[in-house]
Image (cartoon, rainbow, N blue to C red; front, side, top):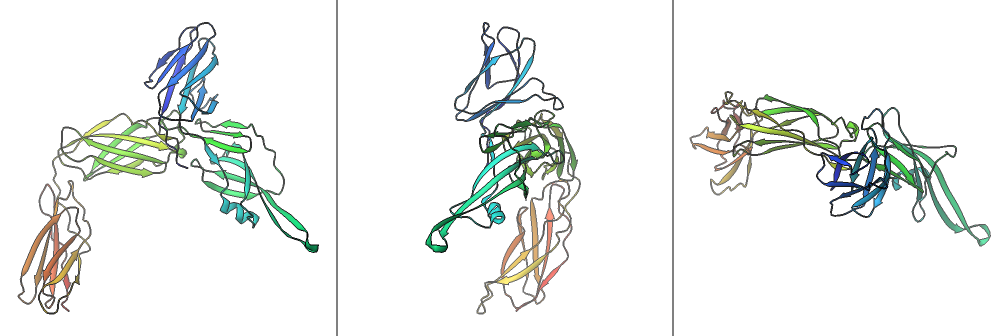
Length: 409
């Protein structure tokens, strides 16, 4: 299940006996009844449900997180009377909790039967101390009926308890059939060191992952025609293992050069942006995402590229083949192909392709855009043709490729 958070905010409220003071929040308002001390949170969004979480200490090593409400059907939440002089931190998301389940295919592999479907009851139990992933116990059952000896109708129940570990996207990492009935709690709840939440509601287990805060420590190194970008996940409210992707963007400043974007999957902390235009200033940002949605962009950094000085290398892998043969005329099609060469330190803007016959049928040249790795010629297939290719960037033309000879048919 893909969850997209339309509203993800972090709120710090200092309760002084009067109206709470809100810092660094634009989507949220907070009021406090001076008589009762009750705090009311109001935010703007188009749909629910919502998850509301409260901390009194944002230090990941000393959490006291509590889920105040889930499946809340409005854009307001009233908290209780809070203590004077205490910092309260709220996270609010309309990304509904993710259900932790055992796939039917896995359940069938364990039971060996599925009569009208397999029913299950899931209970979260802990965060694994080694991997950090959520764990739980799932009861699975299917009931199969049929005629028994003597003509009576009999029902056979197939059931099992299964120990399960999920990743932070709700995928099953491992499952083991238990030989004894485990002890579970329908009201269990737990928070790990990054505010990831697991809790049980009756016979259903849930996982709450909030969108991450902005990455920090973004750096970029200009290498050839690309930026090598690295960053550090936010220190507050994100488990690096829960990050599903990061989007890198380089936006030209006062330039018509194209915006560059790269998406890297998983929790890696580096990526590449390119190809870069020479003598251009770029503003670079990183946005990370979890199943709870995308967080805010990192603080932008700027980096300028120098004038190009390195021409492209010779295109490798040059080849050619015949197609659309016409034995009655010299209108056969020669298709030349090649692989992208090293672009140097600026983007390749064009390729030049030359074919020459060994029997006086002529020499033909054409240029194609730098994003194209194919050229088509209409010539006679009878003689042999030699194909060569070279690339061009802001510096000029690079060397010709090794020749490829396509024999006539």
